[in-house]
Image (cartoon, rainbow, N blue to C red; front, side):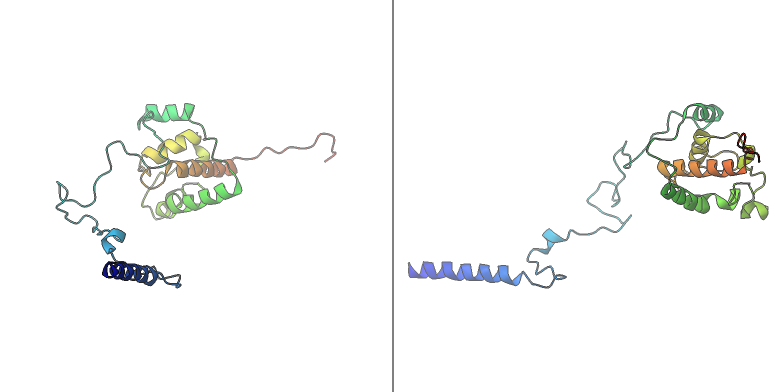
Length: 201
């Protein structure tokens, strides 16, 4: 009986010792791991062979139909002239995207990254690639009959010598770019001079 009790006491002491030794006051120390495989799973190198899968590829494709968070479908508008016309007539700026200071600053940054080299910083079609005659015939926004819908459509599908940028900018970023392009177009439009009636000026 005493022997059994002694064994229990020893087991309790060992358990308590293991518990205490696995905890430290150091904030950057996570303690000892007695079952490391339960903590850290084996990592797979991207695109390396892995015989546990039928096709031996470690990076599996997403399930068919999977979309990213925030995905916006654009399948109802075709990439041809009819789709362009529909986008021009129907598409409106989403309610959640406002032309506030923060959004316009982000839009300008996107424009400088993706658009300036062809369209120029003022949108007049005189970017560095045009000046160096890498591309010709890039129009000025001021000469084009465009709106938010057509800009979104062209960024998505491309038009003329401009290719699609859908893989580079998200739908939300395309709308922000549309805001900035329309601002540049507005800046090119001569403002009508107005006078205050009866002001004597």
